[in-house]
Length: 385
Image 1: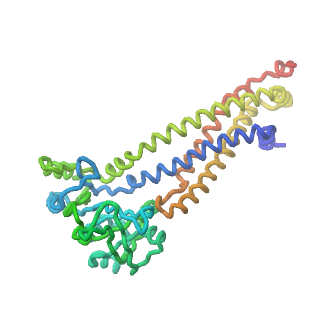
Image 2: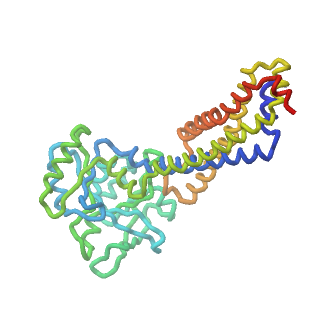
């Protein structure tokens, strides 16, 4: 009988206790896997942000618009290579529950601002030339079974047309694919001119201006110059990098990273106490057995290693089961959400962190029981009644 066999038998000698400890560890790593994956997806916008892309918005918040004339003025700022604009449409398809993330944009400058959109050349040109064209992402196309050539009415719960209706008719003329796994393809884009001419109010306004600079090194100077340009105007601006803008938007939801630390930290702290105490009790119950093993020639360092490996094995069994369950849960959720949260999965990076945490958790919970086993004195242990 080798050491691993002894470790396995000792680990599961009391099956109920082993199962409960495994479940405790499983729950902790299930929480870590799910929250960690959501945190990565929600922060994907920050990680994917282009270094040379700036966002100019109203300094009172993204819910307030800017005059259309600002777009032309910022194009003349030294260091600006390209300037486009985006306006939130607030659309839905057929029913208000079927929300479509739609934006009104200037097609040519928008596509120049976001080269990561993969679009066939003929469809790209159609989006630029065709006034009622709707550019949609692959996720949106799958969700509603839309294809190029389909006529699609989009309604808005914000904007109304001059004829009193709130329905815009479009033809799907282009579908874009992601150049990166984490990139969302659940949005739709329309020509700003087509949208603006039909508005009954708030005409000639844009939601935000997207800028590409000639070099990230000039970002600060360009941002400061733009904001100074409109400092005394009724609609003052706030210009920041795309990464900073994305981070600020995420912070509107909440500090997911801090929530992750608190929730996972609390779960691991409690489970650390439970598992550590249980292992100490388990070793205490086996004091005489350990003394007999030492009598048979097992050196103290060997017993120390066996107890420590036992703790690490328990952590790995529960942890791997928890991460596996998280992966299955997220896979089902990603399918149900139809790609709304691209890249929602337990990635290799998250698994690597989890594996390191399993080993660390096993060592921390096992060090005290292993030391107790190492210190067992044969005479005292065998002399106990």
